[in-house]
Image (cartoon, rainbow, N blue to C red):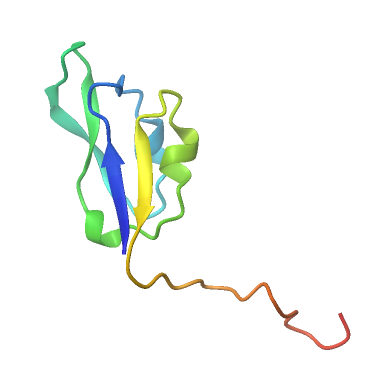
Length: 85
């Protein structure tokens, strides 16, 4: 299962990660960090797919994704889906 980790002190509250997440895992917190920003937090961590779009879009590098246990790949890139390729 993917594990989202957000460094709340690095986050500046831009919200790019919230909009990038296709599953709506992240939301903006009602609390503020030491710098005075509303930071992103995990609203629905059980819905995380591990796509890493949130971490990729974060300009402050405040998000990391860890994978543990079984991870299901939706596609098999080893074989082509049609013969002859």
